[in-house]
Length: 130
Image 1 (cartoon, rainbow, N blue to C red):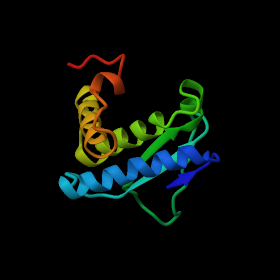
Image 2: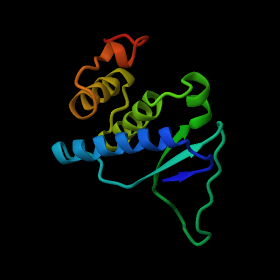
Image 3: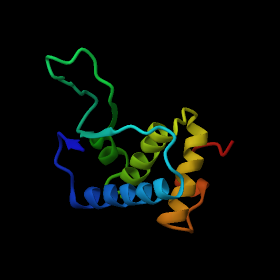
Image 4: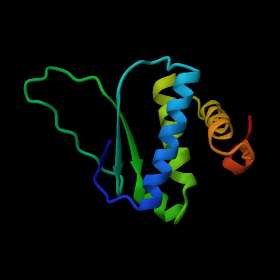
């Protein structure tokens, strides 16, 4: 993990909750894609990467989280970091491209490891359950 923005204590806690939930999910259901990923937390919408000058190529999954947007849209929320981290990790490690499908998986993970009372509709209120 790397961050170019200072994360607030509640954001760090929420990210830890998400990572813990994903670790448990990986134990229950091993990832389909066995690779490493770099989680990057940034303030805005730009990110620049620099690689070893001797590398002819690089394979790396980079999951980028726009913390400034979390704070703007969901001030003080733990849900935005938790849902964002789980969702992007599901995209990356389970190879799920479809947004509705991945949100259902996120919902299942949240119910299984974080809060059994959460439903798809409460987690993603403006998303069609499809």
